[in-house]
Image (cartoon, rainbow, N blue to C red; front, side, top):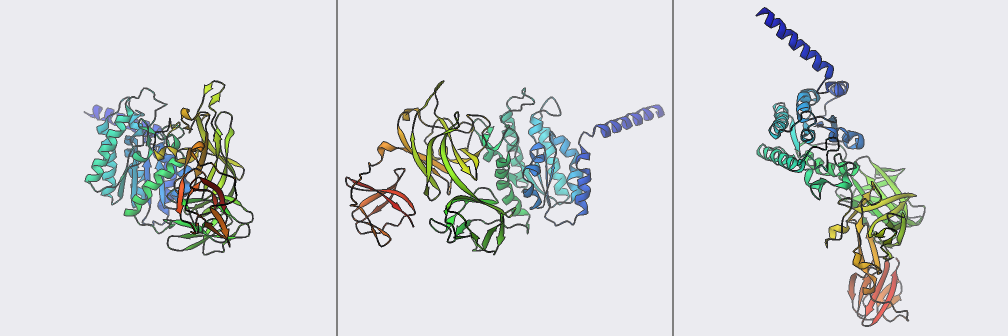
Length: 506
């Protein structure tokens, strides 16, 4: 018996030394930083993020999201739910947080630790972490597994789409049954045949900065429903106003993330520009910063500008937009130059020629120059959006960083070959674009005015008419003698067989 105890003791000691040497759970990764965090005053709003590489890369890609919200990242690349469970007490409970976001399962399905995947064990590990947290009065947030296009490091994995959906369904079922918020990243990030949206990832597994912004927009409101935080207050709506604005005043900004807003607008030199939120709180833009109740910004040069406002970092930028075009992805040259027409819209004519040295090619992107930098615009879903499907969402736009020549493209219908279309890019509200066959637009007659008259700075209609914008969209129907009240831009008036072009400049 004594010999047996000695053997068992030696075996246990050997196993302990081997475990310490390999540190399978990687306890050492955050050991020093855990001590630092525990030495800080506890605000009572701290939230720890427990996860794998998706969580690991988040604080380095979007550090401000963590620093300014009292969030702590505890992700370790490559880890499975089992390894996270092993270090959960060290990296979460000891930090005494108010909440924990648990995101696990991707590497279990990828078989990073074992040469098989067992959904029951993975789910059990996730639920065990949740139960440990609840036993220590820590608010739990259970996150979905993100969609995955492919596991490049383990191409033998098959049917991972079904495995992810099944695990997510069971995590949500448990969360709903135990009053735990379920954070559904999956629905917002999935595209096509259950792949990770190409626009939100560079490798089909990990989010890029745009992907993390989408995740933040989903997660932050859910956390704030349970854990109040007196940090940065992010406006719900933001508008630009002041004498610098050459268009309708004020101009509503587009919310491009949970913390950021953007506007494309024409500004006048010498005019003043300020920012206002939904509570009529005034902000100023000064030295690339956002400051409350400061002096308005004076614009130095006439032009069209992209104004970006990040209320999490309190930073801003005002950059001139010098051109925009429809881009030939192969030649990297413009197929149609677009001119600013007001109201955040650029428009121009495009004569369609799909002939390339290798045959027919109908793919395209948009390109804009902002302060000398080339910015590409592509579809919001997928690397190649395929042929138009008749939906408005097909034409929606976002900034993209193409992985190759033909990535992030739309397609013009092949039936349009040889025609000239009017293209309009819309960068106010929902970013999108549209086109119309120019031959379907009314032909403009160059004759003395019989429909439109300028009367003491007012645009007056001399006859009943329909007013179109330059893309052929009817924007107003007016009666004789009626004053035309439209924003700045180029318009076409049609009354019977008479058609005239006119410009509104305020």
